[in-house]
Image (cartoon, rainbow, N blue to C red; front, side, top):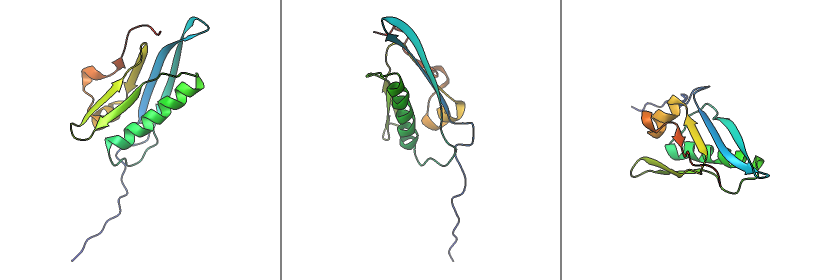
Length: 119
C-alpha cells in the first residue's frame, strides 16, 4: 500500500512574514532615517536558509534605493541552527513573531539593534 499527498500547506501565512529594516545613514552630511517594511510572500519555506535569502535580497534592494554600500546581511548556520549578522551602525531590524519562531529568534533578540550612530 502506498499513500501520497500533495504538499499544499503554508508554513508562512499571509501577513505573517514582515521584517522592518531601518538604518540611519548620512546623506549630504546629514543623518537620514531610512526605513522599509519587507513583506515576505505567503508560502511554504523549506528551511530558514530560504527565508534568510529572501530577507537579504529585500535588504539589499532597500540599500540600493538609498545607494548604500554597507548594509546588514544575515547568515544562517544549519548545523548550529543560529542566525548571525554584521549589523551596521544605526541599524534596527524587527522580525514578525512568526518569523522569529521560524528562525529561532528569542524574545530579547527582537528587534536586532546597533545603536551606534552611522558613520
